[in-house]
Image (cartoon, rainbow, N blue to C red; front, top):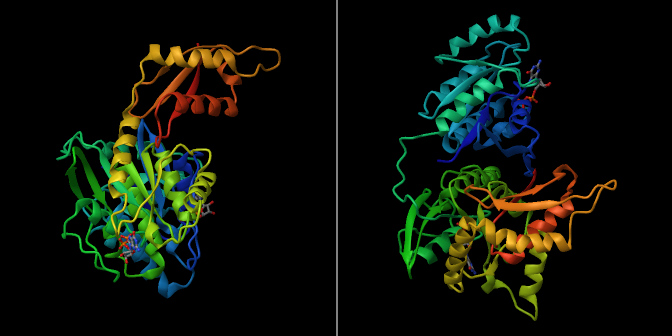
Length: 435
Ligand code: GDP
Ligand code: GDP
Protein backbone atom coordinates (compact mmCIF):
# COMPACT_ATOMS: atom_id res chain seq x y z
CA UNK A 1 0.00 0.00 0.00
CA UNK A 2 1.31 3.36 -0.97
CA UNK A 3 0.40 6.00 1.56
CA UNK A 4 -0.27 9.07 -0.49
CA UNK A 5 -2.45 12.02 0.48
CA UNK A 6 -3.43 14.39 -2.30
CA UNK A 7 -4.78 17.86 -1.56
CA UNK A 8 -7.40 19.13 -3.99
CA UNK A 9 -9.61 22.18 -4.08
CA UNK A 10 -9.97 25.47 -5.86
CA UNK A 11 -7.30 28.15 -5.54
CA UNK A 12 -6.93 30.05 -2.26
CA UNK A 13 -8.73 27.57 -0.06
CA UNK A 14 -5.43 27.03 1.73
CA UNK A 15 -3.93 23.93 0.11
CA UNK A 16 -0.35 25.06 0.27
CA UNK A 17 -0.76 26.33 3.82
CA UNK A 18 -2.12 22.96 4.88
CA UNK A 19 0.60 21.22 2.90
CA UNK A 20 3.27 23.04 4.87
CA UNK A 21 1.49 22.26 8.10
CA UNK A 22 1.30 18.56 7.29
CA UNK A 23 4.99 18.41 6.49
CA UNK A 24 5.74 19.75 9.98
CA UNK A 25 8.75 21.72 8.88
CA UNK A 26 10.10 18.79 6.92
CA UNK A 27 11.67 19.59 3.61
CA UNK A 28 9.39 19.78 0.61
CA UNK A 29 10.38 18.95 -2.89
CA UNK A 30 9.52 21.74 -5.25
CA UNK A 31 8.98 20.64 -8.75
CA UNK A 32 9.30 23.46 -11.22
CA UNK A 33 8.15 22.54 -14.65
CA UNK A 34 8.21 25.02 -17.45
CA UNK A 35 4.90 25.95 -19.01
CA UNK A 36 2.84 25.96 -15.85
CA UNK A 37 2.40 28.89 -13.56
CA UNK A 38 2.87 27.28 -10.18
CA UNK A 39 5.30 24.79 -8.81
CA UNK A 40 3.99 21.57 -7.38
CA UNK A 41 5.03 20.37 -4.03
CA UNK A 42 5.37 16.98 -2.54
CA UNK A 43 7.01 15.77 0.59
CA UNK A 44 7.18 13.03 3.15
CA UNK A 45 5.84 13.17 6.63
CA UNK A 46 4.48 10.89 9.31
CA UNK A 47 1.76 10.74 11.93
CA UNK A 48 1.41 8.23 14.78
CA UNK A 49 4.40 6.41 13.36
CA UNK A 50 2.90 5.98 9.91
CA UNK A 51 4.81 7.44 6.96
CA UNK A 52 3.03 9.08 4.09
CA UNK A 53 3.59 11.39 1.15
CA UNK A 54 1.61 14.57 0.72
CA UNK A 55 1.05 16.10 -2.67
CA UNK A 56 -0.31 19.54 -3.30
CA UNK A 57 -1.90 19.03 -6.69
CA UNK A 58 -2.95 22.64 -6.85
CA UNK A 59 -0.14 23.55 -9.16
CA UNK A 60 -2.04 23.20 -12.40
CA UNK A 61 -4.31 26.12 -11.84
CA UNK A 62 -3.58 29.01 -14.11
CA UNK A 63 -5.27 32.35 -13.71
CA UNK A 64 -7.79 32.46 -16.53
CA UNK A 65 -11.34 31.27 -15.93
CA UNK A 66 -12.01 29.08 -18.97
CA UNK A 67 -8.94 26.86 -18.73
CA UNK A 68 -9.53 26.82 -15.04
CA UNK A 69 -12.26 24.23 -15.12
CA UNK A 70 -10.26 21.88 -17.28
CA UNK A 71 -7.29 22.29 -15.02
CA UNK A 72 -9.17 21.49 -11.86
CA UNK A 73 -10.60 18.43 -13.58
CA UNK A 74 -7.05 17.26 -14.32
CA UNK A 75 -5.98 17.95 -10.78
CA UNK A 76 -8.81 15.89 -9.35
CA UNK A 77 -8.29 13.13 -11.91
CA UNK A 78 -4.64 12.94 -10.94
CA UNK A 79 -5.53 12.70 -7.29
CA UNK A 80 -8.09 9.98 -7.94
CA UNK A 81 -5.63 7.93 -9.95
CA UNK A 82 -2.58 8.26 -7.81
CA UNK A 83 -3.50 9.00 -4.23
CA UNK A 84 -4.69 6.61 -1.57
CA UNK A 85 -6.53 9.34 0.32
CA UNK A 86 -7.90 12.58 -1.03
CA UNK A 87 -8.28 15.71 1.06
CA UNK A 88 -10.87 17.98 -0.52
CA UNK A 89 -10.34 21.43 0.88
CA UNK A 90 -12.99 24.18 1.02
CA UNK A 91 -12.98 27.63 2.59
CA UNK A 92 -15.44 28.60 5.35
CA UNK A 93 -14.94 32.32 4.75
CA UNK A 94 -16.14 31.98 1.16
CA UNK A 95 -18.87 29.42 1.77
CA UNK A 96 -19.86 26.82 -0.81
CA UNK A 97 -19.01 27.87 -4.35
CA UNK A 98 -19.96 26.46 -7.76
CA UNK A 99 -16.44 25.22 -8.14
CA UNK A 100 -16.74 23.27 -4.90
CA UNK A 101 -19.84 21.53 -6.30
CA UNK A 102 -17.88 20.70 -9.45
CA UNK A 103 -15.04 19.18 -7.48
CA UNK A 104 -17.47 17.28 -5.25
CA UNK A 105 -19.11 15.84 -8.37
CA UNK A 106 -15.81 14.67 -9.77
CA UNK A 107 -14.87 13.08 -6.48
CA UNK A 108 -18.12 11.18 -6.21
CA UNK A 109 -16.87 8.85 -8.92
CA UNK A 110 -14.00 7.46 -6.91
CA UNK A 111 -14.14 4.65 -4.41
CA UNK A 112 -11.06 6.04 -2.71
CA UNK A 113 -11.57 7.72 0.65
CA UNK A 114 -12.27 11.42 0.36
CA UNK A 115 -11.98 13.70 3.38
CA UNK A 116 -13.98 16.90 3.10
CA UNK A 117 -12.08 19.52 5.04
CA UNK A 118 -13.47 22.95 5.83
CA UNK A 119 -10.50 25.25 6.25
CA UNK A 120 -9.99 28.65 7.87
CA UNK A 121 -12.22 27.79 10.80
CA UNK A 122 -10.08 30.04 12.96
CA UNK A 123 -12.49 30.22 15.88
CA UNK A 124 -15.47 28.43 17.37
CA UNK A 125 -17.93 30.95 15.94
CA UNK A 126 -17.07 29.82 12.45
CA UNK A 127 -17.99 26.22 13.26
CA UNK A 128 -21.63 27.08 12.60
CA UNK A 129 -20.82 28.55 9.20
CA UNK A 130 -19.26 25.25 8.24
CA UNK A 131 -22.66 23.52 8.37
CA UNK A 132 -23.54 24.65 4.88
CA UNK A 133 -20.85 22.34 3.48
CA UNK A 134 -23.16 19.41 4.16
CA UNK A 135 -24.76 20.47 0.89
CA UNK A 136 -21.74 19.00 -0.91
CA UNK A 137 -23.18 15.59 -0.10
CA UNK A 138 -20.52 14.09 2.13
CA UNK A 139 -21.48 12.26 5.33
CA UNK A 140 -18.92 14.07 7.36
CA UNK A 141 -16.56 16.99 7.27
CA UNK A 142 -13.60 18.14 9.31
CA UNK A 143 -13.06 21.71 10.41
CA UNK A 144 -9.52 22.95 10.59
CA UNK A 145 -7.39 26.05 10.47
CA UNK A 146 -4.44 25.16 8.30
CA UNK A 147 -2.70 28.31 9.39
CA UNK A 148 -2.52 27.36 13.07
CA UNK A 149 -2.89 23.62 12.69
CA UNK A 150 -6.02 23.46 14.80
CA UNK A 151 -8.11 20.41 13.91
CA UNK A 152 -5.41 18.81 11.76
CA UNK A 153 -4.61 16.20 14.41
CA UNK A 154 -8.09 14.67 14.28
CA UNK A 155 -7.98 14.74 10.50
CA UNK A 156 -4.61 12.97 10.41
CA UNK A 157 -5.76 10.38 12.96
CA UNK A 158 -8.54 9.37 10.60
CA UNK A 159 -6.44 9.52 7.45
CA UNK A 160 -3.61 7.32 8.72
CA UNK A 161 -6.19 4.87 10.02
CA UNK A 162 -7.12 3.96 6.48
CA UNK A 163 -3.44 3.35 5.72
CA UNK A 164 -3.51 0.51 8.23
CA UNK A 165 -5.33 -1.78 5.87
CA UNK A 166 -5.39 -5.13 7.61
CA UNK A 167 -7.44 -6.80 4.90
CA UNK A 168 -4.82 -6.39 2.22
CA UNK A 169 -3.18 -9.68 1.29
CA UNK A 170 0.06 -9.44 -0.62
CA UNK A 171 0.36 -12.32 -3.10
CA UNK A 172 4.14 -11.85 -3.10
CA UNK A 173 4.52 -11.59 0.66
CA UNK A 174 8.14 -11.69 1.76
CA UNK A 175 9.73 -11.12 -1.64
CA UNK A 176 11.85 -8.06 -2.41
CA UNK A 177 9.84 -5.39 -4.13
CA UNK A 178 11.68 -3.52 -6.84
CA UNK A 179 10.68 -0.60 -8.97
CA UNK A 180 12.26 1.07 -11.95
CA UNK A 181 11.81 4.82 -11.96
CA UNK A 182 13.09 7.62 -14.13
CA UNK A 183 12.10 10.37 -16.45
CA UNK A 184 9.98 9.63 -19.51
CA UNK A 185 11.93 7.86 -22.27
CA UNK A 186 14.93 6.83 -20.20
CA UNK A 187 14.13 3.24 -21.08
CA UNK A 188 12.03 1.93 -18.22
CA UNK A 189 9.87 -0.24 -20.47
CA UNK A 190 12.85 -1.48 -22.40
CA UNK A 191 14.69 -2.47 -19.25
CA UNK A 192 11.56 -4.13 -17.90
CA UNK A 193 11.35 -6.15 -21.09
CA UNK A 194 15.01 -7.02 -20.98
CA UNK A 195 14.58 -8.30 -17.45
CA UNK A 196 11.37 -10.18 -17.98
CA UNK A 197 12.27 -11.28 -21.50
CA UNK A 198 8.84 -11.78 -22.88
CA UNK A 199 6.65 -10.05 -25.38
CA UNK A 200 3.84 -9.07 -23.11
CA UNK A 201 5.03 -5.55 -22.74
CA UNK A 202 5.24 -3.95 -26.14
CA UNK A 203 7.60 -1.02 -26.28
CA UNK A 204 7.36 1.43 -29.09
CA UNK A 205 8.38 5.00 -29.70
CA UNK A 206 4.80 6.19 -30.00
CA UNK A 207 3.54 7.62 -26.79
CA UNK A 208 0.37 6.13 -25.42
CA UNK A 209 1.17 2.52 -26.18
CA UNK A 210 2.63 1.13 -23.01
CA UNK A 211 0.34 -0.59 -20.63
CA UNK A 212 -0.62 0.12 -17.06
CA UNK A 213 1.66 -0.45 -14.12
CA UNK A 214 1.73 -4.03 -13.02
CA UNK A 215 3.57 -6.32 -10.61
CA UNK A 216 5.50 -9.16 -12.16
CA UNK A 217 7.49 -11.92 -10.55
CA UNK A 218 11.12 -12.12 -11.63
CA UNK A 219 12.31 -15.65 -11.02
CA UNK A 220 15.54 -16.51 -12.78
CA UNK A 221 19.09 -17.64 -12.09
CA UNK A 222 18.25 -18.19 -8.44
CA UNK A 223 16.98 -14.67 -7.90
CA UNK A 224 13.43 -13.84 -7.04
CA UNK A 225 11.82 -10.43 -6.71
CA UNK A 226 8.66 -8.56 -7.61
CA UNK A 227 9.05 -5.93 -10.27
CA UNK A 228 6.63 -3.06 -9.90
CA UNK A 229 6.44 -1.68 -13.36
CA UNK A 230 5.59 1.97 -13.80
CA UNK A 231 5.98 1.94 -17.55
CA UNK A 232 2.32 2.61 -18.08
CA UNK A 233 2.97 6.24 -17.45
CA UNK A 234 2.38 7.57 -20.94
CA UNK A 235 -0.90 5.82 -21.50
CA UNK A 236 -3.01 8.15 -19.47
CA UNK A 237 -1.13 11.29 -20.27
CA UNK A 238 -2.92 13.18 -22.94
CA UNK A 239 -1.58 16.56 -22.11
CA UNK A 240 2.05 16.98 -22.94
CA UNK A 241 3.02 19.57 -20.37
CA UNK A 242 2.02 17.27 -17.56
CA UNK A 243 4.03 14.27 -18.59
CA UNK A 244 6.90 15.04 -16.24
CA UNK A 245 4.59 15.52 -13.33
CA UNK A 246 2.70 12.34 -14.09
CA UNK A 247 6.00 10.55 -14.08
CA UNK A 248 6.84 12.04 -10.72
CA UNK A 249 3.47 10.96 -9.33
CA UNK A 250 4.02 7.44 -10.58
CA UNK A 251 7.47 7.43 -9.13
CA UNK A 252 6.19 8.50 -5.75
CA UNK A 253 3.67 5.73 -5.73
CA UNK A 254 6.01 2.99 -6.76
CA UNK A 255 8.82 4.19 -4.50
CA UNK A 256 6.48 4.05 -1.52
CA UNK A 257 5.58 0.57 -2.49
CA UNK A 258 9.03 -0.93 -2.92
CA UNK A 259 12.19 -1.97 -1.10
CA UNK A 260 14.69 -1.19 -3.82
CA UNK A 261 14.46 1.62 -6.33
CA UNK A 262 16.26 1.36 -9.64
CA UNK A 263 16.79 4.94 -10.72
CA UNK A 264 17.23 4.91 -14.46
CA UNK A 265 19.21 7.75 -16.03
CA UNK A 266 19.64 8.49 -19.70
CA UNK A 267 23.33 8.42 -20.65
CA UNK A 268 22.71 10.77 -23.56
CA UNK A 269 21.21 13.39 -21.26
CA UNK A 270 23.15 13.07 -18.05
CA UNK A 271 22.01 13.62 -14.50
CA UNK A 272 19.15 16.12 -14.28
CA UNK A 273 17.14 17.87 -11.60
CA UNK A 274 14.30 15.41 -11.95
CA UNK A 275 16.71 12.54 -11.26
CA UNK A 276 17.83 14.35 -8.14
CA UNK A 277 14.22 14.72 -7.00
CA UNK A 278 13.55 11.03 -7.43
CA UNK A 279 16.75 10.08 -5.65
CA UNK A 280 15.92 12.43 -2.82
CA UNK A 281 12.48 10.93 -2.49
CA UNK A 282 13.82 7.39 -2.41
CA UNK A 283 16.41 8.40 0.12
CA UNK A 284 13.89 10.13 2.38
CA UNK A 285 11.71 7.03 2.14
CA UNK A 286 14.74 4.97 3.22
CA UNK A 287 14.61 2.72 0.19
CA UNK A 288 17.50 0.83 -1.30
CA UNK A 289 18.83 2.58 -4.39
CA UNK A 290 20.66 1.45 -7.51
CA UNK A 291 21.50 4.06 -10.12
CA UNK A 292 21.47 2.62 -13.60
CA UNK A 293 22.77 4.69 -16.49
CA UNK A 294 20.99 3.42 -19.57
CA UNK A 295 21.61 3.79 -23.34
CA UNK A 296 25.33 3.38 -22.75
CA UNK A 297 25.48 1.97 -26.29
CA UNK A 298 24.79 5.47 -27.64
CA UNK A 299 27.72 7.09 -25.89
CA UNK A 300 30.97 7.35 -27.78
CA UNK A 301 33.56 6.10 -25.37
CA UNK A 302 36.92 7.64 -24.93
CA UNK A 303 39.32 6.91 -22.11
CA UNK A 304 37.65 7.59 -18.79
CA UNK A 305 34.23 8.45 -20.21
CA UNK A 306 32.62 6.10 -17.74
CA UNK A 307 34.74 7.36 -14.87
CA UNK A 308 33.85 10.96 -15.60
CA UNK A 309 30.20 10.17 -15.91
CA UNK A 310 30.22 8.31 -12.64
CA UNK A 311 32.24 10.98 -10.87
CA UNK A 312 29.80 13.62 -12.08
CA UNK A 313 26.83 11.78 -10.63
CA UNK A 314 28.58 11.12 -7.33
CA UNK A 315 29.46 14.78 -6.99
CA UNK A 316 25.85 15.72 -7.51
CA UNK A 317 24.37 13.20 -5.11
CA UNK A 318 26.83 13.95 -2.29
CA UNK A 319 26.89 13.32 0.61
CA UNK A 320 24.93 10.12 -0.06
CA UNK A 321 27.47 8.71 -2.49
CA UNK A 322 27.63 5.10 -1.33
CA UNK A 323 25.28 4.00 -4.10
CA UNK A 324 25.99 1.54 -6.90
CA UNK A 325 26.13 3.15 -10.32
CA UNK A 326 26.08 0.82 -13.29
CA UNK A 327 26.16 1.47 -16.99
CA UNK A 328 23.89 -0.62 -19.13
CA UNK A 329 22.13 -0.89 -22.40
CA UNK A 330 18.61 -2.13 -21.94
CA UNK A 331 18.37 -2.38 -25.72
CA UNK A 332 21.36 -4.70 -26.24
CA UNK A 333 20.93 -6.18 -22.76
CA UNK A 334 24.49 -5.35 -21.90
CA UNK A 335 25.03 -5.67 -18.12
CA UNK A 336 21.32 -6.10 -17.46
CA UNK A 337 22.08 -9.19 -15.41
CA UNK A 338 24.56 -7.15 -13.37
CA UNK A 339 21.68 -4.87 -12.49
CA UNK A 340 19.83 -7.79 -10.94
CA UNK A 341 22.89 -8.68 -8.87
CA UNK A 342 23.07 -5.13 -7.54
CA UNK A 343 19.38 -5.03 -6.78
CA UNK A 344 19.70 -8.15 -4.66
CA UNK A 345 22.84 -6.93 -2.95
CA UNK A 346 21.22 -3.63 -2.02
CA UNK A 347 18.16 -5.48 -0.79
CA UNK A 348 20.37 -7.59 1.48
CA UNK A 349 22.17 -4.49 2.70
CA UNK A 350 18.91 -2.86 3.60
CA UNK A 351 17.97 -5.85 5.73
CA UNK A 352 21.39 -6.15 7.32
CA UNK A 353 21.35 -6.53 11.09
CA UNK A 354 24.62 -6.18 12.93
CA UNK A 355 25.06 -7.79 16.30
CA UNK A 356 25.56 -5.29 19.07
CA UNK A 357 28.75 -7.02 20.20
CA UNK A 358 30.23 -6.88 16.70
CA UNK A 359 29.17 -3.29 16.23
CA UNK A 360 30.82 -2.18 19.46
CA UNK A 361 33.91 -4.21 18.79
CA UNK A 362 34.41 -2.35 15.50
CA UNK A 363 33.07 1.10 16.29
CA UNK A 364 34.32 1.80 19.83
CA UNK A 365 38.05 1.71 18.93
CA UNK A 366 37.33 4.02 15.98
CA UNK A 367 35.46 6.41 18.27
CA UNK A 368 38.23 6.23 20.83
CA UNK A 369 40.83 7.14 18.21
CA UNK A 370 38.66 9.98 16.88
CA UNK A 371 36.24 11.12 19.58
CA UNK A 372 33.70 13.90 19.09
CA UNK A 373 35.41 17.27 19.56
CA UNK A 374 34.99 18.59 23.08
CA UNK A 375 32.85 21.66 23.47
CA UNK A 376 33.44 24.41 26.04
CA UNK A 377 35.87 22.14 27.84
CA UNK A 378 33.33 19.35 28.09
CA UNK A 379 34.42 15.92 26.97
CA UNK A 380 31.94 13.89 25.02
CA UNK A 381 32.12 10.22 25.63
CA UNK A 382 30.32 7.67 23.50
CA UNK A 383 29.92 4.55 25.58
CA UNK A 384 28.27 2.05 23.32
CA UNK A 385 26.11 1.65 20.26
CA UNK A 386 23.44 -0.59 18.90
CA UNK A 387 21.42 -1.11 15.76
CA UNK A 388 17.77 -0.30 16.35
CA UNK A 389 15.11 -2.93 15.68
CA UNK A 390 13.77 -0.98 12.70
CA UNK A 391 13.04 -2.23 9.17
CA UNK A 392 15.87 -0.20 7.72
CA UNK A 393 19.36 0.32 9.16
CA UNK A 394 19.28 2.81 12.02
CA UNK A 395 21.83 3.11 14.78
CA UNK A 396 21.85 4.63 18.22
CA UNK A 397 25.10 5.80 19.83
CA UNK A 398 24.84 6.44 23.54
CA UNK A 399 26.81 9.34 24.95
CA UNK A 400 27.04 11.50 28.07
CA UNK A 401 26.33 14.71 26.13
CA UNK A 402 24.63 13.72 22.88
CA UNK A 403 23.31 17.23 22.31
CA UNK A 404 26.86 18.48 21.69
CA UNK A 405 27.59 16.10 18.87
CA UNK A 406 27.45 17.96 15.60
CA UNK A 407 26.61 17.04 12.02
CA UNK A 408 30.19 16.49 10.78
CA UNK A 409 30.81 13.89 13.46
CA UNK A 410 27.55 12.19 12.64
CA UNK A 411 28.70 11.99 9.04
CA UNK A 412 32.04 10.60 10.18
CA UNK A 413 30.23 7.85 12.08
CA UNK A 414 28.03 7.08 9.09
CA UNK A 415 31.09 6.84 6.85
CA UNK A 416 32.81 4.52 9.30
CA UNK A 417 29.74 2.30 9.43
CA UNK A 418 29.74 2.18 5.65
CA UNK A 419 33.46 1.44 5.58
CA UNK A 420 33.17 -1.49 7.95
CA UNK A 421 29.84 -2.98 6.95
CA UNK A 422 28.17 -3.20 3.56
CA UNK A 423 25.38 -0.66 3.39
CA UNK A 424 25.92 0.29 -0.23
CA UNK A 425 22.78 1.72 -1.78
CA UNK A 426 21.00 2.07 1.54
CA UNK A 427 20.20 5.26 3.44
CA UNK A 428 21.16 4.80 7.08
CA UNK A 429 20.30 6.85 10.16
CA UNK A 430 22.59 7.63 13.04
CA UNK A 431 21.19 8.94 16.32
CA UNK A 432 23.00 10.07 19.41
CA UNK A 433 21.19 9.40 22.61
CA UNK A 434 21.60 10.10 26.29
CA UNK A 435 23.24 7.39 28.31
P1 GDP B 1 -4.04 27.47 -2.14
O1 GDP B 1 -4.14 28.35 -3.34
O2 GDP B 1 -5.23 26.57 -2.03
O3 GDP B 1 -2.74 26.73 -2.05
O4 GDP B 1 -4.14 28.44 -0.86
P2 GDP B 1 -2.99 29.06 0.09
O5 GDP B 1 -2.45 28.03 1.00
O6 GDP B 1 -2.04 29.81 -0.76
O7 GDP B 1 -3.86 30.04 0.98
C1 GDP B 1 -4.66 31.09 0.45
C2 GDP B 1 -4.84 32.15 1.49
O8 GDP B 1 -5.60 31.66 2.60
C3 GDP B 1 -3.53 32.65 2.08
O9 GDP B 1 -3.62 34.06 2.23
C4 GDP B 1 -3.46 31.96 3.42
O10 GDP B 1 -2.71 32.70 4.36
C5 GDP B 1 -4.92 31.89 3.81
N1 GDP B 1 -5.17 30.78 4.76
C6 GDP B 1 -4.76 29.48 4.66
N2 GDP B 1 -5.17 28.77 5.74
C7 GDP B 1 -5.84 29.64 6.55
C8 GDP B 1 -6.50 29.51 7.82
O11 GDP B 1 -6.52 28.45 8.45
N3 GDP B 1 -7.11 30.62 8.31
C9 GDP B 1 -7.09 31.81 7.64
N4 GDP B 1 -7.72 32.84 8.20
N5 GDP B 1 -6.46 31.96 6.46
C10 GDP B 1 -5.85 30.92 5.91
P1 GDP C 1 10.30 4.74 -20.83
O1 GDP C 1 9.45 5.91 -21.22
O2 GDP C 1 11.24 5.11 -19.72
O3 GDP C 1 9.55 3.49 -20.56
O4 GDP C 1 11.28 4.47 -22.08
P2 GDP C 1 11.20 3.34 -23.22
O5 GDP C 1 11.62 2.02 -22.68
O6 GDP C 1 9.89 3.44 -23.91
O7 GDP C 1 12.37 3.83 -24.17
C1 GDP C 1 12.32 5.06 -24.83
C2 GDP C 1 13.14 4.97 -26.11
O8 GDP C 1 14.52 4.74 -25.80
C3 GDP C 1 12.71 3.81 -27.01
O9 GDP C 1 12.82 4.25 -28.35
C4 GDP C 1 13.74 2.74 -26.73
O10 GDP C 1 13.94 1.88 -27.81
C5 GDP C 1 14.98 3.57 -26.47
N1 GDP C 1 15.92 2.87 -25.59
C6 GDP C 1 15.67 2.33 -24.37
N2 GDP C 1 16.79 1.76 -23.87
C7 GDP C 1 17.77 1.97 -24.76
C8 GDP C 1 19.16 1.62 -24.81
O11 GDP C 1 19.75 1.02 -23.90
N3 GDP C 1 19.85 2.03 -25.90
C9 GDP C 1 19.25 2.69 -26.92
N4 GDP C 1 20.01 3.04 -27.96
N5 GDP C 1 17.95 3.03 -26.92
C10 GDP C 1 17.22 2.68 -25.86
